[in-house]
Image (cartoon, rainbow, N blue to C red; front, side, top):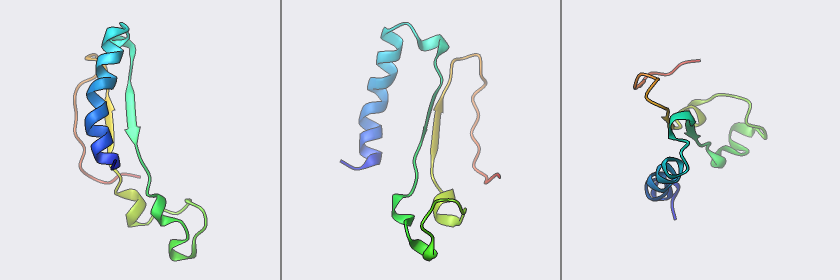
Amino acid sequence: MSPAKSLTENWPKLLKLIKNTGLEKDTIIAFTDDHGDIFSERSLWYKTAWFENPSRVPMLFRAPKKFAPNCVSGLYG
């Protein structure tokens, strides 16, 4: 199963579990990923340099309503 498909199928299950356990108002979920395929690319053996490939990884957050919704499409760092 691809990571995107897995996330699509399991994200609602995770949210339901958190709601059913009564932790919905106190839980922040942060999801991110890395590019495993960068290993040894550009003669690098460690993931310590930020080239374009690893910096274009989506992040997904879910936070209680006390935080205002926001979407950021730019690069920061």
